[in-house]
Length: 185
Image 1: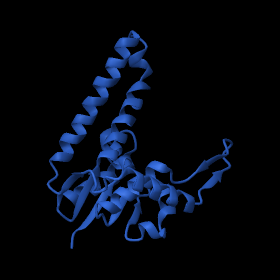
Image 2: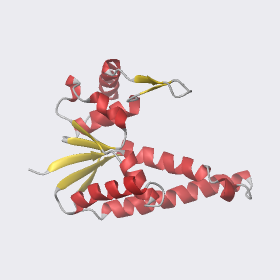
Image 3: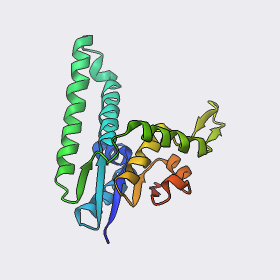
Image 4: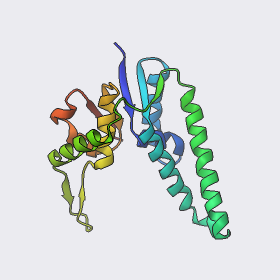
């Protein structure tokens, strides 16, 4: 039986960034896509993942100070929107070439149920305070939990990510059938 992988946005963003930004993440992400290409697994990309990808690409383009400084504010916005859409379109075009990659919305139509389940899972996640000078609380967040619920709803066997926060969701009853594969570089 072919396993079904839900791809987190950071897998797609590593592919989009190319080997120059994070070579190990790029190589590992391409390895996952190669498994899908060869038919060893089925890949799933959700609408939430695609929304996160376009948002991050916009932020990335919005930080290109050297490109933006010489432009008027209206030109800056146009640049960010145009360039991020170009990167997004290129990524989606490449993904669409993979015969074993599916774009899915999930079967749940009841947003209330999704949010109720997500809140219950968030209450189970311990998280941790990182004493790195900023003393910030880290761990799986709301969007991560919704990704996990979508992956389960779509019948995925594994959620593939670089985000170690997902490790906290292993063992939660509501997600018992879903495995979390956190790629470590």
